Amino acid sequence: MTNEGSTAGGEVLVCENVSRWFAGLQALKNISIGIRSGEVFGLVGPNGSGKTTLVNAVTGFYPPQEGVIRFQDTVLNRLKPHQVATQGIARTFQNVALFKGMSVLDNILMGRHIFMRPSALASLFYWWWAQREEVVHRLKVEEIIDLLQLESVRDEPVDIIPLGLQKRVELARALCAEPRFLILDEPMAGMNQEEKEYMVRFILDAQEALGLTVLLIEHHMDVVTAICDRIVVLNNGEKIAEGPPREAINDPAVVAAYIGKKSDAA
Amino acid sequence: MFYRLSGVHHTRYETARRIWPVPADRRMVYLVLALAVAAPLYMSDLYLTSYMLPWLIWSAAALSLTLLMGIAGQLHFGFAAVMAIGAYTSIHLTRAGVPLELALIGAGLVAAGIGCIFGAAALRVKGLYLVMATLAMQYLVDWTIINVPAISGGAQATLSTPSVTFLFVPLRGDTALYYGALLWAVIVTMLVLNIKRTSFGRALVAIRDKDFAAAVIGVNPFKYKLLAFFTSSFLGGVSGAVLAFCYYQAVTPEQFGFNVSIQLVAMVLVGGLGSVIGAYLGAGFVLLMPIVLTNVVAYMAIAGWLSVSSNLLAHIPLMVYGGLIVGFILFEPLGLAKIYDNVRKYFLVWPFRHTQS
Picture 1 (cartoon, rainbow over the protein chains, first blue to last red):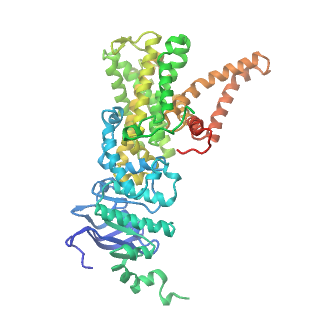
Picture 2: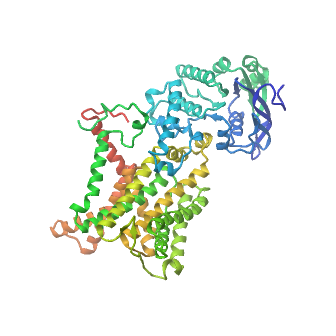
Picture 3: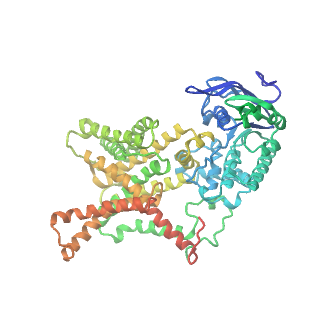
C-alpha cells in the first residue's frame, strides 16, 4: 500500500479508491492500485471478483462512480472508450471481440484507426488521397504481423481461423494502436498448453520490442507467476492481496478466497 | 483455365489492394462497362429507357442503402423518403435557376441533413426499434411533401423537371439521359468499392460487427453511425434527383411511397447485404423479375399450358415473385451475390475443389 495518492515512482496508471456500483451491487470497493512503467502487472481473483469491471472502468465502459483513475497525468474518469484509446491504452477482450465480417488483415488494420483520417471523400478520390495513407499504415501493420507470426493467415476471414490465432489477431490489433499501456483480459482463456506458451512468448516479445506496460488478467496461475512482476488479488470487489506473485497467491486471504476457509468445510 | 489466381503475384501493396486483384475479374468488369457504354448502339430505345436506365438508377439507390444497411449495419426502412427529399430539392433548385450540377449536390446535402436528423434520433435504438424510427421518417416526409404546397406544388400535383444541361450537355433525348444515369451508377459503384477497402469502410464494418471493440480501438460509434447515415443519405438523395431528372422527368409524392422503401430493402436483401454486385443483381431482380414472370405466365396461358381464370392469372406472377424472395431468404440468406461468388470461386480453382478465400 505504498502507492496511494501519488503518481511518483514511475507509476503510469493509478487508481485511487475506485468504486463502482451496479444497482445495489458494489462491484468494486475502494480499489487503489498503481502500475509502474514497464512492468507486467497481474490482476487475479475468482470469477465475479471485479477484475473485468476494473478494466472496464479504466477503458471508459463503466466509469467509476467514486475515485480517480489517472493515466500518466490524464484523468480517465470522464473519457469515453474511444477517447481512452487515443491516450495510448489498448486492450483485448475476454471473449474474442474481432470483427467477423473482415479478414485478418483488415482487423489488424483497424488497430491503426486512431492514426488515420477516414472519410468518404478520401475514399471517393482513393487513388489521389486515401491510397498513400493505406500503404503507409499497411507497412506498420506488416511489422506487427511479422512480430506475431500471422503471415500465413493474413488474408483469411477472421472467423474461420482457430481460437488461438484469433486471440493473437486481437493482440496484433491492440499493438497496432502503438499503445504505451496494454490491457489483456484473459488472453489465454480456452487455450491448450502449446498455445498458452506461444501467447506468453508473444506477450513478452511485444512488451520488450515496444516498451509496453502490461496489465494482465489471467486465471492460469502458472502463467501469472511466470511473467508478472507484481499482482493484485481481488475478491468480491475488494483488494485482498498485493505484491510479487508467489507471495501474493500464498497469502492466507487469497487461499481462503479461492478454496475456502477451514470453517467453511461441511 | 483463363480464370485463376495462380501466377498473380503482388509485390506492392498498391496492387494487392486493387479493387479486382484477379485479372479475369478485371477484364470482365471492363467488358461489362464497355457493353454498358455501347448500349445505345445496339439496344432499342424502348429497352434502353424502360429497362436499362431505371435498373442503373435503382442499382445506385440500392448501393446507397447497402452502404448503410450492409456495411454499417443500420437498418433503414424509409430510404424512399430520402430519395424523395433529393428529388424535390433538385427540382426546386433547378426551377430557381441553379445549375443542375450544383442542384444535385444540394439535393444530396439536404437529403443527408434531414436523414442525419432522423439518424441521430435512431442512434439510440437498434434493430427493430431502428426500423420503427426510420418508418416514422418515411411517413413524416411523405406527409410533409403532400401537405406543404410549397414543396409538392399542391395536392396531387406533378412537378415536371425543367430542361437542363449537365456539364454543358443538354439532358434531352434517350441517349443523354441514359449516359447521365450510367455516370451516376459508375460514381456510386466506385465510391462504395473504395469505401469498402479504406479506413472509412473498415470503421463502419467495425461498428456493425462489434461496437464495443470498435470503441476500444478509437472509433467513435456515434460519429461513425452518423457519418454512415450522412453518406448514405447523400447518395440516396442524389439518386432520387437523378431518378427524377433522367427517368420520371417529373415528381409526384407517390413515386417515393412506403412500398418503394420496401422494394429498396428487398433489392439489398435479395442481392446480398453489403455487396456491390449484389445491389445490381438485387435491383435487377426486383425490377425485372415481375415483368419476366408476367410475360412467362402470359405466354404459358396463351400456349394453353395454364387453364386458369384471367383473375388468377394476374396474380400468379406476384405469388411466384413473393415465393422467390422467401426462397432466397431461406436458402441463400447472403443473396444473389453469394450465388455469384460461389460460381466464381468454383471456377477460380477448377478443376480442383478446394477454395482458399
